[in-house]
Length: 314
Image (cartoon, rainbow, N blue to C red; front, side):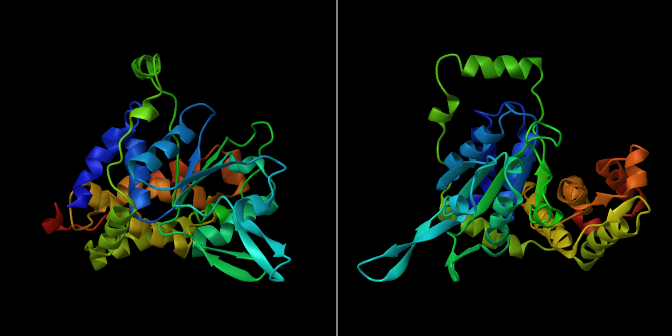
């Protein structure tokens, strides 16, 4: 089955992103789940390279926009021009008309340009001059952002953060991994040797297969209780939204697929809970003063909420 090629995809991405199989797995899960990925990290650790590698391994049309303070919404979603011959407006597509869109350093542009992506990410449409245009299917957005406080950065609005299924961080390579990177880049770019493992139709088949993964009522209740705990926590001002709970369900199913199961177990939920939820919660000022972090609170919630016991799933 096509799903069994997941290991090949991960190994192929590993040619250009050394020692980061855990991050690659979670990006692949998110793509299988039909979601969008936010990569937050320091410059130069391979965020853009990873996005390009995925486009090659999955056979997807790829476009990239480097966000800057002067990037316009029309650069993203397109614009209309007047045709003198017909007297009509003709739509000129923007960079978002592709299968895999990379928004590089998304938090370096204006709020108006950031918001141009909201409709595309949620509804897979763009509306220009009152006319709605469908995006290609599948459509995946991988956005990178530098940590807040870097030169020229500004915070993404909560409504946009909520549209990213996961937030991930690649991190710096260790000594041995850095040496491997240098060895591979001494004579040529590893991206040039990458092979296409699956294509667009294969990916759509996997995304459709996702709905057949069994999720029991106990698991659904477990996900719901975990997310509700974020809304009741004394240190959290804004908890996980219903959209976040749906994202948790989809990611848990995708996790089960990569673990070669056709059913979800509590460990699947636990593995991706922090990645799905950490960027969706807003801490209270007092919690920030006390040095609390979203990830720390979510780990406490995972310890406090008892997972269901599913004997058949272990």
